[in-house]
Image 1 (cartoon, rainbow, N blue to C red):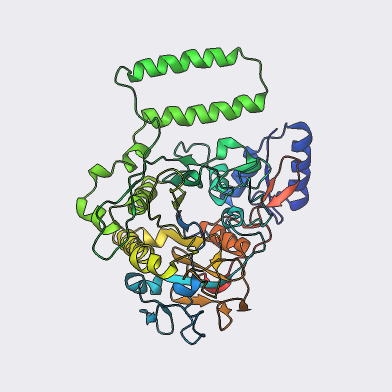
Image 2 (cartoon, rainbow, N blue to C red; image 1 turned 45 degrees about the vertical axis):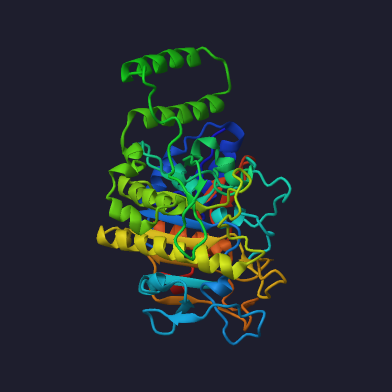
Length: 477
């Protein structure tokens, strides 16, 4: 069954909301209406008459709950036991202060906006809102994605990709979200759009750094790679194409549902292109990169992944997720630089997470700027929730969804901007509440995609891609 795009306002070729909804209903019933017509209309449209400034998005995701009180919303006047151990420092924008352990990031505040009042009611360790804007709860004991879930922003970009573009528009690095915990986290998938719009996902083999710098905790080492993207030694392009032709002949004689065939063929074609074309493969070949640049990003798994993300932007990929994940469920280690800091929060942040984040973010922004890509690349730094204002008995902070921060920088963003104010403890929103759906709507707006664009779920019900979110006008140029 095909799914179509609709729109609540008039589309560029005169298709109204009523027409779009009618088409969606007919499509759900008959499967016979071509979605290419409405996709072409959406490609021609611009939001509010303006094209999006961002050609690409790099979404750096700090999985596990990054603490806003120790990064972007410090409260030095709060009582002991709440204010933490870190001091705020001035940035290059008067009136904006961030953590003392983010000095390089402080030099980029003129290109950044910080939204300090993000909150949701979807529950802790629910990653679905961050990527889709949908706050439906998930089973914490079985959080694996479902086909009924809404698609990620990157999957929508893949869905709207012009038909003549073979390059994937959605890539995730260095592994699928949750791989290190032996599960799949929901959110970064195509959901009810179908698996053909799932991201291209790299793989990695993390190892712990045996010799971290003096005074620092170890980071995970490794480099993202494409799985099965290389030909075997005894294979040639000719043999591969012959096998593909034989497989196609076999598929033509298999009597299965048309939708399943189409979905399978698209996945098969993508795999074939990865083995025979060099654009994406080249982006992962960091041995061709200047070693000094690799040093600037950081010789660790996160630094390498962010550098590959920049190379993918140059290759033309539309949306890239980079996950700062945990791996201790797969690899025995005495220290995992994860963001779920229930204990020793300040030691972990000071000796590992913050200095490494500071280095990699600065390298990315500098690299994009020097290459002329910053004005057309949106950089998003987010997490699935925040952490408790009160420090617990083990010097950690626990889960907290009621108030946390998201940083956006680059294309389409009004730099030097703060949006929203938390209360005196950074516990609750004081003004300008913001939900994950609003962050998603803002990202869509920067990309030139209307946040109210309708897609249809498996029952034919029209669903806005931002799930009711509204772009944050205060941080947009």
